[in-house]
Image (tube, rainbow, N blue to C red; front, top):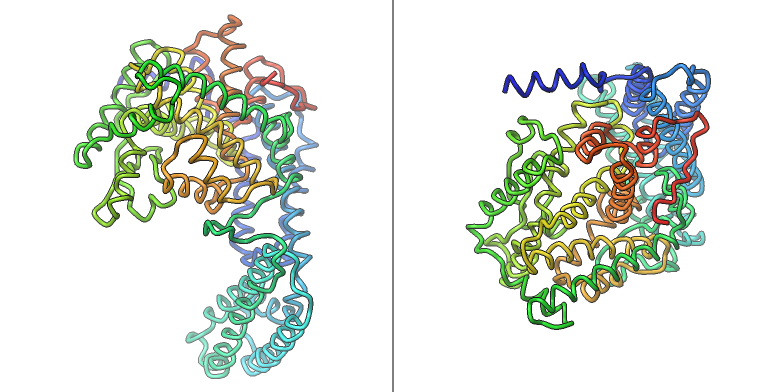
Length: 561
């Protein structure tokens, strides 16, 4: 243990601190400002909120312009670029969200007195309870009148607008309720006057919000029968997300790359299938591999053995520095049956969450879970979740440039882990044809993610089409495909998250080729440097490795070409 700590400290002395740069105070202050404002302005669907946060982003962009960029270290320059890119992205999407809100904000045009009530509550101003009671009664009449007018008005032209209108009413209700609860029972006069008016108005707001949620024309299908309700973001948002993640490609170009990567996987899958005796029928080979599943009680121990095997593989080839503490602190837990409906496979970080059947599942569900988490599939993903994957990433991010965690990008997060699947394939990590089928299944899946996620967000495919694509083209179990699509579109993932696995992996793979095969770094130096940079768009990390980050830095690296 002492040796590990001394090695860590010596590394900082030799390479320079990886904790702070010239921009550290500014970035830390920004994060503190943002948190403080979010706690104070507690209605995220209000003019007050949108205008205050727009000012925050613009103020910090203005402050950046006055900073002495040329005097900064390379790490300071990289922080400057990260910070500027983050602020521009946040401002753009914030303004886009504000415009969406303005299109539906008329549904709360009775809001002024309620907003004044919860705004003055922040400073604990003692209200005139009788006047507030009269105001609540008057406002409830305005809400009912607005409700009646909305019934007669033309319905919203999409369910997304109706949903946002409903959320706007609910956000106003919650802020009002929070202010009411602040005074209730602590102020006897307020409690006496306000109990009934609040109860009545609260129920009216709930009912009004429920009405708005379904007040739309069915011009865009909300549920295609899959039961998965997502929100396609459209071409503009996709293009902007790509630009802010420094991916200089169009959605159409990435779709072509997804098909190209899938074709490579299919060709390799046929080779493995032929070796297993199934000829060109690679889906038969896939079925064979799925049926190598382990008995439920033995599976967790096999997972830990796979984790240790991956660590030994890396260290025996001196590919990466793995801190002793990182090896010591990872652990395991089991995933609930309910959660497996959304996440049918491993999730990871410091804890690897293992998917496998429980007694509450039907026989069919049990078999799908076991077949989808067979040893040959899983050997390709245990290391993705632990070491050198997400656990090592999180471990390093807490210790190197921790202020950069606000700049989270899925291309760094999932790109690094997918890159290791590429690299381990190249280094003959799969022991036999079954292992190759397992690794290829996941690689094919990541190529398919590019195709189905972009087609969905561009409005070309429905969730059910995405499910069918995963079953037909990749060979997923039906329930696992449904869970994958549900996780992609109903979870908290951004629109680029699913394509970031393969595209980010190709970025890291291309950067390694440039730096290592180009003779600028050893492979271990490349890996050690990459993993200690924290969240960074990979093209910007490339500029840092090459030692040139101009102030007018623009994304231009055509890594797929």
